[in-house]
Length: 353
Image (tube, rainbow, N blue to C red):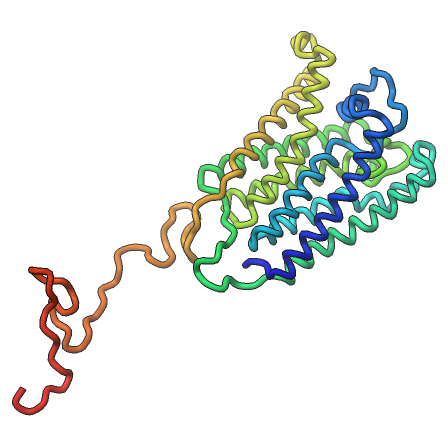
């Protein structure tokens, strides 16, 4: 299914609104803290000089801004942008929904001014409404192709689907494993770690740390399974999952280089070694998923098997076409000398024929 023109324009406008909201918060942080200090804060280099003002965004917001711009362009240019609108709406709901109840906590009141929190709450409501509208638009604005030549969404190729399935599902499993370890080691953080609270620090416009990690893990697993099935929505879901997965790994590598942990890797505890290896794997998995899903797979005919390519129209030898009544060999086909054969006799020859 593809989108009507009205649905495409509506989805593009909603995605552009989300891009503008995210860009405004990013510009506010750069203006208030400076890009260098903001980058260090995003990376977790807290031993550096503290920023002039506490940032409100994270590296994920920068990725989301790029996603919104890409979805806006895709909705305006391609009629098969329904999956892109859905995944952008789902990710936005997951990221902005907790702000509706965490912005008013006492910890937020002590960290940010009332004016800033009021604007953040309004933006959170607008973002949640726009995300829900994007999902509804993608579902209600679908239509069947007008003809067989109209381009429809395609899933990844067989090799790309297997690669995306392996790396994304593995990355999701690693994230879930560390969340389980977090609960076992520090159980007193539950449930604030996932739904927010006074004991957990978080960005003003972002979700609680546990909520963000579990959401990302579920997105990676869902995208990996859809890539294995070569579903038409696998590419946008996998590309967004890889893009959101990348910043956490990159910032982890930045911390490793800054604190020179690789030089003393053999002196670290086993748990810390596994944490560093997980960070490197997260970067590699995100890059591999982005590369594997960047190019669409071949167009499959309806009913064609996604792995073997069998089935669907034109599968196997063409069936024999029964000849026209009275149509004999040579009728309508070029004969020797480049001419055509004699015309066939009528179906009911007249007397004396």
